[in-house]
Each structure stands twice: as structure tokens, then as C-alpha cells.
Image (cartoon, rainbow, N blue to C red; front, side, top):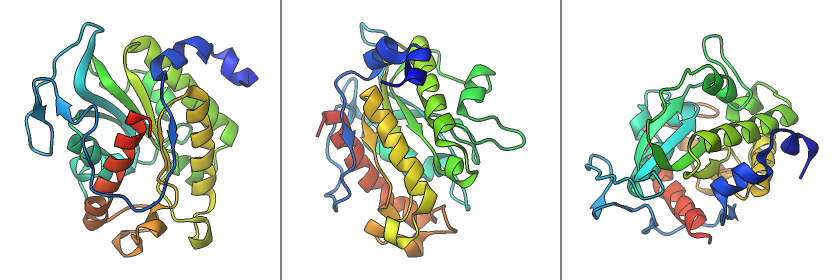
Length: 256
């Protein structure tokens, strides 16, 4: 455990948030998404797209079947694709989670844009409308803009740890999950997006948080023609990637 990690007092608090989790980075082709602990919301009501969710608060104060997603344009929506149709949000919904999204396109753990701070700044300044209840999952998705803006890996990793600590103080019963950077493979131009993705995998491992690793997925799943630009998917790409993400997330949550 490094000095910066100790300095923000994460050793006890964040480990309590993510206890019992594993890192998942498998990139082999996957079968259709299957059931997970979150697939059926309380009361047995599924939460697929357009389906009502029955969320019940458990004795630990956590509202089952809910997820708080912190993200960038991959989950905010871009290139004409609305946020609710993005692969992170649809993947969570397909596993039974009612999703609250916060964040902004063009931002990240350290990355900013003119009218939006990075994740940590946005949290500290009260820019996000956070749920008044503790969600079952807190999902950090991002890193692509940190790569694109050339942010130092030390700043990105430190901010990710600090945000995890602050979220745990606010929602001590929630479970943290981290999602890396959607990119091409190393021999297909993955570049610095893969570097940041790998670093975030290390942060998740340090925090013992489940990590869903989309590094290389554009190449692995042949999504090159489903890209609207160098980093954003067309609607067809989001549709194709949704079950892939849902399967990886289900495996991560189940410890496989």
C-alpha cells in the first residue's frame, strides 16, 4: 500500500466498501449476459430497459437494485446516442439495476472541461445530484479523458482513491465497482488509453474492488465499424457492447 493511499486514510474505510471483490480482465468472447445478484430487484421485478423497478431498502440502509454510475461521455451519451442507450447504463439495467447517473462528457478522475470539474472536484463542490439513499452499487466509469488530456497517472490514481474514500463515507453500505477505459488493443492503436486502463485496474486491485476491463474491446469484438469517431460508439456499437459489459460485470460481482 503506497504512501498516498495511506495519506487519505483509505486502508480501512474503502476496503469495507469493496470487501470480498475481485479483479476481472478476461477478454474472451462471452455468452449472453446471465443472472447476477442484481438481476432481480427486490420483490422479484426485473429491471430491463423500460421495466419498472421495485427497490427496497435493506436493514443495512442500502436500497437493493439501485446503482450510482459516475461517468464520462461513454455513459453520458455522445455522437447522437442518448445517455440511457449507452453500454454502461444499458448493461446495468439489463442486470436489474435502476441507474442514477452523474458526471459529464470530457471529464474524468483528473480531466476537466471549461464548465465541468473532474470527478473529485464535482463531488466536493456539490455539482452532482446524488441519491438520498445508499445505492447497492457505486460504479466508477472513466479514464478515457484522463488519457486524452495527458493527465499524470499519479494524479488520476490519487483522485480515484480519494473519490472512493469520500463515497464510502457518504454511503458506507454500498459496493464499489470500477470500469476501465474502452479502447483498441495494443497492436491496434490502443495507446495511452490502455496505459490508463491498466493503471485503473491496479487501483481497483489495491482497493479490492471488482474491475471490469474494457481495454482492447474495440478490437476483440470487432467494433471498428461501430465507432462514430476515435473513442465514441455509434448506436450499433452500444447495442453490441451492452451484453458484453453486462456479462463481465456479472462475473465481477459474483467473484468469477
